[in-house]
Amino acid sequence: MAKPWPVTLREDTPSGTVVLRPLRRRDATDWSRLRAENAAWLERWEATSPGANRYIASTFGEYVRSLSAQARAGTSLPFGVELDGALVGQLTVASITWGSMCSASIGYWVSQSVAGRGVIPTGVAMATDYAFFLGLHRIEINIRPENKPSLRVVEKLGLRDEGVRERFLHIQGQWRDHRTFAVTREEVPEGLLARWQRTREAL
Image (cartoon, rainbow, N blue to C red; front, side, top):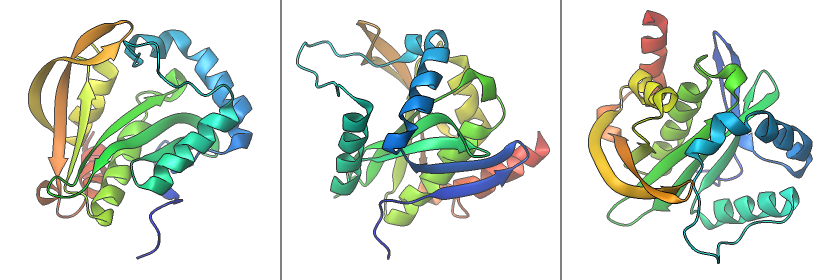
């Protein structure tokens, strides 16, 4: 098998070509513009740290180097999300655990301008299939109960609802409840992307 990182995943959809690929230092301008334009759209769902010792990269270049180091160490797969060649968001397969668990979680954000067009469901499906290809067994996504756009993503993909985790993640200065959705390899023997393609055609 080829080394797991770096990797680029691509899928043609009715909304355009969706690509997952590593972030690059030259993405700094586009990434910063996206974050600024979508601040109000994203910040209520952004994770925060309850302590004062959290490391924060001082430059975008340092941020990219940190992500690359995590990917090379096998603890995450940090992707930039493109639609028709334009950066529109970010998706990370995080908390990768091997051994008896073989599990990971997926988190993402996307520009409000392309929300609802199937970009993130496609990205999640591609990333999940790639994680399963690498040998992981279970993928989960944790979503605040109030986050209707993200709940729509897992609904479209048909992920299993595992219930509420109380005070699960620190968001905007408080510990917040999250609903956990998951999928295992046995549930999608043909792949999550193939299942999403069938669902998308029926919508």
